Amino acid sequence: DTGVSQNPRHKITKRGQNVTFRCDPISEHNRLYWYRQTLGQGPEFLTYFQNEAQLEKSRLLSDRFSAERPKGSFSTLEIQRTEQGDSAMYLCASSKSPRGKNTEAFFGQGTRLTVV
Amino acid sequence: AQTVTQSQPEMSVQEAETVTLSCTYDTSESDYYLFWYKQPPSRQMILVIRQEAYKQQNATENRFSVNFQKAAKSFSLKISDSQLGDAAMYFCAYRSAPSYDKVIFGPGTSLSVIP
Image 1 (spheres, helix red, strand yellow):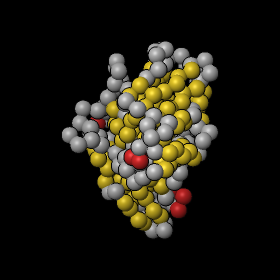
Image 2 (tube, one colour):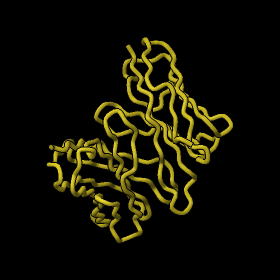
Image 3 (tube, rainbow over the protein chains, first blue to last red):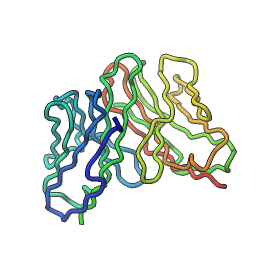
Image 4 (cartoon, one colour):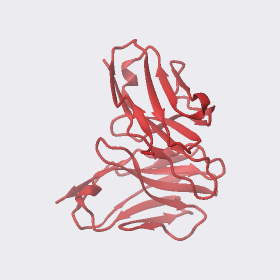
């Protein structure tokens, strides 16, 4: 297992187009998180899943954003009708459902979205 | 709601010297975890060190150590014998222990290491 994998690494799209990103978590991790990070800022929480259930969504996640995790494995994040303000790094992280000391979230390398 | 604050947007340190990055947080919970994550340029975020709130002893990982002051809600990171590879964004982060849900990040401190 090579860690959390995100695809694509970079995406350039025209304003108004739809985009979809994929995240493959570490195989034994049942929690999966999506964050958005703009240049020079800390990651902002978007949403997270435990297995296939989406447990929390941030108010940052507008109606144009949707995330899924079918079968509790990989996850997709779709942005519809992209806007220039959506340009950011989208980070995925995974962790075990914490029991004991398994508190660490492992991050992928992110997908950098540029909306032109 | 929990918040994490890092008051130093940028810091610099001479190679081989020691630097301390500051972090404060706000929470009403008594049980939680605190983390420092490192994000090198164009590379993925990795965990540097973690602290469990119920432990009074400060965590240490090789050249990295923390000063955890629970009453003051302060969690600083000390990097000793700084190396060029330490140059990165450093994020202080919080995670609730009872709910173990999302990690909340501070805005980050950009650390430069001067040869």
